[in-house]
Length: 364
Image 1 (cartoon, rainbow, N blue to C red):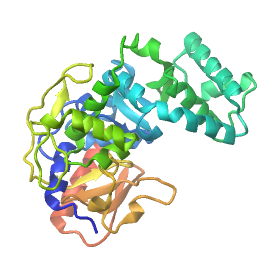
Image 2 (cartoon, rainbow, N blue to C red):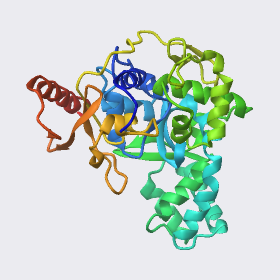
Image 3 (cartoon, one colour):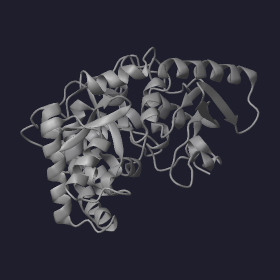
């Protein structure tokens, strides 16, 4: 069993915007959490629903497509994440260098795609997007196939990842129900003139704690996919901003912060913060919800219910009650079906029914 107690769970849920006043916009949610697991499109949108009020999935699509305030890219841990466009540059520079070698290795495993062939594919992707972008994954696959480069199996994914970690492309706007790819420069403009890794590590620690504190240095390292020494360096850089806790966990002393600009290191106090002891109301959380990705140990939330995470690494949607998972759920034919782990009190069931209605409203 874990030694993370209910008070810490309550503090983390408050940091996650699962209790207290909800966020007003999708960007507010994403900037608070810094990066939201993004390989499941519906799950990423539902993460925003659970932390806001009155939004719809169309609002997230608007941020991705019209105002370009949101995007998806391979970042932390080599995984697709939804981030604010303003945070893309420094997060990409900080978290992607370690992905280059594994990407080359995976391409070699996928039909023996050599580094030279991968370079040629990246050139094809870049040229296609320059001429005709935005383009969907299928449209880019056609261009790469025409060039005589293998895209079967997972080869296409790793070729797109190669172009992404090199800083050339991101997943930007929606075309129908698909995320289209765009060239970074075309979509976001010119890159900042300078990247300061020390400043970025400090900002990473600060922003991580704003959306996940209290937490340990190992929690931060695992979440960001960086070496433990980097997590320690970032936390050391903001030591004057940290509370003195008996349990040794790191937490910001002031109100949790939100960025004041698109430059790392410039923050401003966030208003309407919940009390530290407040647990969320019963809530339906989507697949790959950030509450299961922010720390080294998921047992404080899942307990013995390990089947929320399947053997092939899929994180199932689940119901959160008093800071604990009490059921999984699915959406079929426009209806939410709950699968409780055990009997639930009627008031809890009623609250989850009401939240299920909001899921339907949100998804439209």
